Amino acid sequence: MAINNEPLKDPFEEYKKEKDPTRQERAYAWSTAIGLQAVDALETSEYLINVANRNISGEITVSEAQALVESYYKTDRKAEKTRTEEADVVSSRIASLLSQNGFVFSPGYYLHIHEKLFSGIYKHAGKIRDYNITKKEWVLDGDTVIYGGASELRATLEYDFSQEREFDYSGLSMDGIIKHLARFISRLWQIHVFGEGNTRTTAVFFIMYLRSKGLNVTNDIFAKNAWYFRNSMVRANYTNLKKGIHETTEYLELFLRNLLLGENNPLQNRTMHISGLLKGQAAVNSAQEISEEQAARILADSGLTRKTAENGAKLFSEFRFDRLFSRSDVMSVLAISHTPATLLLTKLNTIGSTESVNGFGKGKYRFNPAFFSNSEK
Image (tube, rainbow, N blue to C red; front, side, top):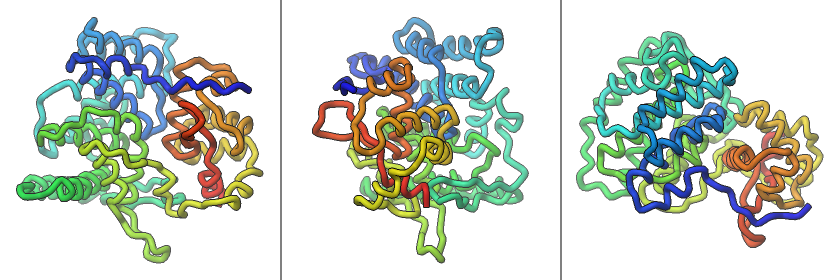
């Protein structure tokens, strides 16, 4: 099969290159809004991309864009009434919030963001959960973080806010600022004050908080690494003394260094997996025997939707570990168009099942044997 050199295309790429700062900011807001849906393995629709482009170009306001999306799902019975609706509606609401200048550093505003994002989607929108939770985490090999206890959530939330409000940033280097911010936001996330939607709410709140501190967050880090952001907070709140694993903010700090300092640290989910990274031919030999069905299960266990996992498994069956492939190859194998192929590659790269390959032209990828070997253990 011929391999094409065509690189991945961001649907808002041209706007981000423009000199018009307003269009740039709108493009980054929409990219972030859509990218954050990956933390819950949600996929947005082509309709949302079209509406977003109309807003970025200035044809409609962000409020009008949000109204169009919500009206679409209320009135069009042919619209897909699945979690795509959640992804589209929440994306439009995130874009709207990120387009506003107002911000209040308080527990109440944190709850307000959740209500704004998930009103009409979750019955508990804006409400503190009243039950205890656990969540099986891929990065923890199926184990869970110890989240805040239901009876202490409000008190814990208020305490964390009071501690941060009193913290003095003066005299700190950017290294010190980043270390502190990593501790603050990972602790806020660990409370997990809501039944669902914690990571998206925390990310939106954090972006607004950083901007209130005069920090520039207009880039693609959240858009392209939303699942890494979530996994880094998982690792910042997990200790297992028996296995010799200790909570660490090192991964979250790398994310923040890219976000705030413009560094280019590799943000790969597999490096955070507690089983460690397998290397060498042994990993290839172990993973080579995985069937397409097993590959689909592994990908689904890593947070992908069933459909995405099945498409990824078809690619895995076609290319294995000894063949490079491009977006055009994805389109050919799966008989899909440009945008779905781009989204699929982004999701596969995000969880570490594929990796970019240099030296063979632009836009080349291969499946990562260490990812599949680790997952089979």
